[in-house]
Every structure is written in structure tokens, then in C-alpha cells.
Amino acid sequence: MQPYLDTSVPAGVDPGEYARLLRRVHQAVLSGGRPPASLRPVIADSWERVRRSRVDPDAARPTPVLPREELQRHRSASPLADLLPMLRQSLMGVAEEASYIMVVADERCRVLWRDGPVRMRRIADSTGVVEGSQWSEEAVGTNALGTSLAVDRPLQVYSAEHYTRGLHQVTCSSAPVHDPRNGRALGAVILSGPARTVHPTTLALVSAVAQHAESQLRGRHHAHLERLRAVAAPLLSGIRENVLVVDSDGWTATAAGMDPPRRVLLPRGLQDGGAWLSGLGQCQVEPLPGGWLIRPGGGEAPAPTEVVLDLAGAAAPEVTVRGPSGGWTHRLTLRHCELLFLLSRHREGCSAARLAADLFGDPERLVTVRAEMSRLRRHLGGVVESRPYRFSEGLRVAVRTPDYAADLLPASSAPGIRRAREEVARAAHG
Image 1 (cartoon, helix red, strand yellow):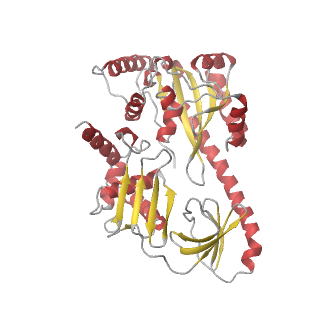
Image 2: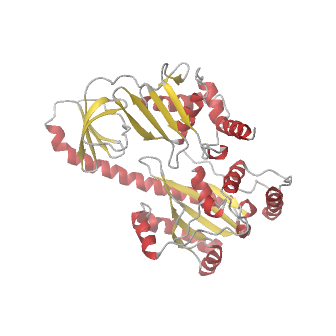
Image 3: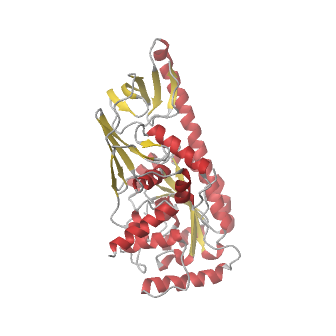
């Protein structure tokens, strides 16, 4: 599926005129006046987060540059390091031709690698885009790298959409690169250059390159599963009971005596011994090199009694499910976060059409909603019911939300989530 490309300049609009309009909007918003136009929602939300972080629009600079030894340590630990030749080959031709610099950053918005024409590297030096600098929203305000990772999608930021005035002469396009095993962002690839070079195809390019990087990572994951199958083959040949072999993220490598799920949600801190696993019940688990051997015990565990949806933590959103046999915690995809949050606001239940309207603004997208709900119910056994979709009867449900409305699932653009943010903001202002 192609990601939504959040380009900056509306089609048919002169970029120079639009930059001047954005500067008037910037001045009005920061001075408390009435802006002559509205910002894109993704930029307006980012500015709200940035203002709360007390970023100075006239003085914000990246945090101190990492020492060379620490930078090298982060480079070596990054899964993007092995992809660097491909990233350079894909982006450097455009960077040289169009006066851009190419940046590869990690999931914490730290610039790990930078390349481009000498003249552009010197300009980048003057704005602080150097290897080892940190470009989160909290450090420098709204920018393509920090904001694209905050909202977890490709994003272009142009001229005075940047919160800090020192970046108003720049345009940047950034696309996150995700780990195909668990969907978490590993970092981002970015092209940055003078504002006059803004073009929607730049964002399309970095998005395509990010997808290609994810494809290469996916191939490596498949190779790892093949190796895990080879390791497990001698063990499975002598086993007469149901058994499942999964990698450390729960993806199935092979199975014997049973119809295997595509993936098992493994609780954090899984250890050798007994464990309750969603969809499998009580199991015995044994470590393997790079994964686990799972022996289902036959029969599901008692129904869960409590679910806690944590959207307030500093890390990724997660769900905790507890019951008589224990509990487990698992990180969630954005879509599953959205669904569980929406269901928590409608304990009486929601039809597929209502969820489609809340997620996409289109009540006709029933097939997509039903497919997502099927996956969610399969992962969270005993938590969600259907017809209508709702939390199971008798289940205690708690939702931990952030203190500020703009921090409520910032990566979500779903209409139902945006309405929830507005309600939280109104309640906070009395």
C-alpha cells in the first residue's frame, strides 16, 4: 500500500507567493493575531506541540552534537547502516542535480549520515544539519525529520511551515523507515535544500526509497526465518505434540501438528517456562537461537478481566491484558490503537460503518474495517466482540491518555481521533 504523501505546496499555487503567505501566517500565529490562512493540520498540530515545549522560534538550534565515538556507536547499532550504499545510490544523483543534501537519521531524530554537494554541506553546517545533531520537534521545532517521525508518515515541510525562523529558507522531505517485523520506525531518510527547489516529486522519491529499504529489511527477515527453520528441523522431527517455532518478534518460522498462526503476540520479558499467549492459551516456551519453541498446552486460558490501553507513555502505545492466568503487555500498531481508543469511547458498541467514518471519514470502507477488526480480535483473544464491535462484557477497561490534547495519538489523522483531541482541548480550557 502506498503511503499518503503529505506535500506542502497546494497544486497550482506559486511556491514563492505561498512562502510569503506562510510567513504572514507564522508572524500572526506567534504574535497572537489572526492568521490570513490556515496551516495544514499536520503542521498546526506540530506547532501546538512545539509551543508547549517552549521552543524559541528565533533561537532554536539542534542539541549539542554527539562526540565522534558515541556517533559511531549509534551508527554501528543502526539497522540502516547496511542499507547506506543503496540509500546513497538512490538519492545522491538527485541531491547533486537539485542542490540537496541527503540525510539518514535514527528513530530519535539523530543525524547519523549526511552527504551532498560541498556547497550544500556548507549551508547545512550553518543551520546545524550536521552528523550527530538531534532534530526532534522538542529540539528545533517543526521540521520534516522530527515531525515525520512524530506522525510516522512521509512529510514535506516548506519555508515558514518550519517553526523556527532560521529554517524559513529551506524545504525538506522526510520518510520514516520501518522495521517490517514489528512496524516500529528505525529512522528516516531525508532530502533537504533551498526553499526555491520545493517540488512534490521530492517527497515521492524519499517515500519510494524508504519503501525499498523496508523491502530489503523484509528480505533479511525472511532469510532469518529460513535459518530458524533449519535450526528447529532436528527438534521437530522427534516431537509428536503440537509445537510452534517463532522468531523473537513472534513471526512463525515453522510448526508441527497444528495450523500455525502467522504471528504470535509475545509478551515483553518472555522467559523459559510457562506463559499464557494470546490465541494459544497456556504454553511452555523454550529459547532457540533467534527465537522460541512454543508448546501449546491445549485449551484456552480463562477470559481476561482487565485491559489497559496506555497512550500516555513516553514509548510507543501499548496494551496490557490481565486475567486469572496472569497478564502480558504488547506494543500496538497505530491502527489498532485507534480502534481500541474509539471502542473505549463507545462501550455500547460500534458498527463497522461507524468505525469507518471515525477512521477514514467514509462509512463505506467496511471491508477495511472488518479486516482490521478481525486481526485485532485474533491478536487480543477474549478482549473484543463483534456485532456490534465492542469490548467484552464484564471486562474492566482503562485508558491512560496524555496530559495535552496534541499528544493524543499524534500520528493519527483519523476524524474520530481529531474530534477526541478537540474535546480534550476544550475540557482543558474549561
